[in-house]
Structure formats: C-alpha cells, structure tokens
Image (cartoon, rainbow, N blue to C red):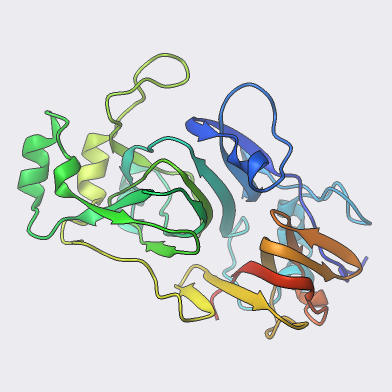
Length: 313
C-alpha cells in the first residue's frame, strides 16, 4: 500500500520528577492523570518504546515496521543502514530544574555500554527568567569542578544562559548541561536514552529515594574545554545540521513543499496548516513520507510556524 498521506503517531508520555502539565495547557495534549509528565516521545523506535500510527490506512503499523519494510517509500534514500530508525523526537516539559548531566560521545558510550547522543532544542515556550546551564564559565577546569562536586556548590562553575521562546540550542555529546524550570522544549536527538547524571541538586525521585548518579561516567564524558556556548542564530531557516539530523523552522506565509527526496517530521509551533486533506493545529505532529513530499503545507490564516526534523543533507 502506498504512503501518499501524512502519518500521525500516538504520543508516548513519560512521567518525570521535574515534569508538569504544560503539554496540556500550551499544546492542547490530553495527558494521563497522576504523575507529572516530563516528556512526550512523539517519534521513537526503541525496544522499550515504539511509535504506532494512530489513524488512516496504515493504522497500527509501528515505526520500526516502517523502517524495516518500507524504508525507501517512507524515509527516502541516503539514511544510515541502522537496525532502528536513527532519530528520536520528543517534547520536554521542564516544570522544575533538571539534573546536571551529559550524554556520551561514541567512544565513551561503547566503553560504558551506553548509546551516543547528540541533540538540539527548540524552545516552544520559556517563562520569564527561564535559563539553561550549558558548558562552563570561562576559566573553569576539570580539577576545580571535581574538587567542589562533593560540596554540591557547582552552580557558580556552570555557564548560565537565559533563554526565550523561539531560541534554539545545539547540545553535542560531551556538553555538560541542565535545563532550568519553565521551559517547554522540542528536542531532536540521536536514537539514544543514555544520560549520565553528575549532580541532581540533592533531591529525591518519584519513589522518594535519591536518583542514581553516574559520576565516573560523567567525568569521562564531559568536555571541560566547553566554555560559555550560546544559542543558535535565529536568522536562518535551518537551525542546526549535524551528521545525525537537521532541524528547520518554517514561517508559512504561502503553501510550501518538501524540497528533497526524504521524509520530514513536523511539529506545528503556532497556527494551523493543512496537508494531504488533513488539518493540523498547534501542538500536532505528523510525518510526511518521502513518497508524499510533493504535498504542500498550506497555512490556514496568519502566523503559522512549523518545526521540521529531517535527515542531514
């Protein structure tokens, strides 16, 4: 059966100690009751979490089945020949401060039995005074960081960066970081769930116990020469392109079509658009298969903005 229409998937919601309800309040999502929801995994192909098409002629088909049996039709050509779809797309609701953490580069991931992870963030909403910690302040050394780690007074060593709605930030593997409270973030990343926490602000997890730290792994993964990185420029349509993925933002004033022979995963940031006979409003996501790249995105009214996760060119 051909893939000539947008594909939508059931989000997978993840409880997190630092999560909240912004996915409902700001994006119109229907969330499960109970625990705070910190993440929505909107496009994922992992053993423990699998995106499944929720409507249309392909309803019930998993992302892994698309990748395994319909790779060229859905995703196009030129992607790596991996066992699983190599990109994970999620939305984070940081109602509270996240841990200070790092994702491993390839060599360290192999050594510790994890998965390498580079990611990029787009701030769907940032509350007043929202910030992230990204890398270190100028002059900070590994010796300084390690010497003060036991005291828990590491915040003065970290580079604090104010963030605003519409900002984008690149987080290569090895970059020490923490997301501050009041940030709603769309994240594109390598297909990995490996995070090493070096410090967690002395708090307890959802089970009432301290969350595990990974000090040895963190210290071997962190790039201690990473001083005071900044946000990505807002002037370009392409926010970031790296060997693993590309992230674009389109401000739609007229119909626009996919320019290359590949897939694109879309998140409607503002407004409403129509594609393939379906309407998508703020907070909606859909994958436009390579076979359907000719289908234009039609903005409905003014102020339509869409985030696009694609394969690197």
